[in-house]
Length: 429
Image (tube, rainbow, N blue to C red; front, side):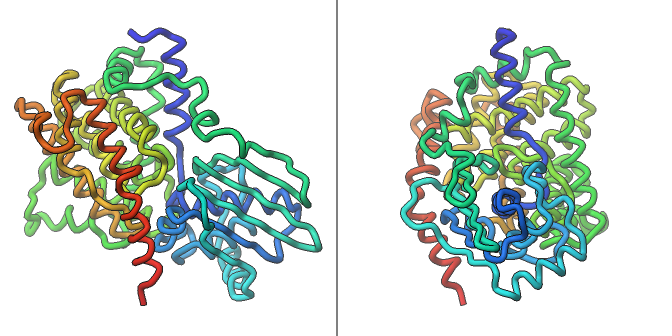
């Protein structure tokens, strides 16, 4: 068993990375930064200038903003300034109501908001908001993490300045060095009472899916998969339930429903994908509560581990990483040991590497469906003793090196893809 002090560090890491969020985390992070700058200004801003990295801009262009019935960044910025509370973190717009939305619409119509691409920055997650009113000016900057403020100032006087501190130092100071073997050991041997907190991800994300079944959200992928039993081509199987629950929660979230989900590594969709396939499989196979808890911890911590080397945002769709986590959790629930977990991860990397991220949007639910389909297949193959070998493609004999190969492609190799995707998105008629 991992030593108590190291277990406490891992639990603290999970609690930092697995947190509730309302709406897509990129526009919510922009709203959070705007709320903080308005609080620093001490009055309602007359003008707001927003400067964003390409990845933030890409992920915030086409997604619904909770409680508004509107899409995109301007309303998120307006509401961040008008009713946002930075203390709520990624639930910053929790207090939105119809009156605030109407006020936000007027704020936009009055052309108080400017949103531009921040040029010449290497950081993929960068948000800079400048607000002014009555000859006063305030600035806030988030960088490296969706809630990681690195700079705040009012009238030229900095009240926070961590810009010279590396993101890795700021976020990972004191964290243990993870490997897939350590993820497995922690999830399967830590005292169960220390892990029970992860069940909140089950409660939130399952509730989001069930709310989506009752409404019309996005492309209704989850409802389509559920279907009328007389014409449901997939049948009433564990597999079809996994697909429908996962995609339904994403449908609601991307459409801007005022429904909280449990996120992972700054992404609600990653949190959904790491949670619901495991939850549905556990329920359908009547797994014990302890098995469910350990499977969820295994899934979420595997995602955190992979994201540490991939980075918060990249050209690689986050469902690739999150579905890899859920494949680990499902494999465990199928009775697999560490060897089968390794096989499931390699099978995932061999299959899904290269799926592009072209922003947060309603059709993300289709990508989640593809990811969890592969997760289920990879787990089944692993349990049958089938694993992609080291003579095939980017798979290495060492599973951690295979993971690094995946993240190297997503973090560095697909940079030109990222630029091209943004160019296409911003030049559509």
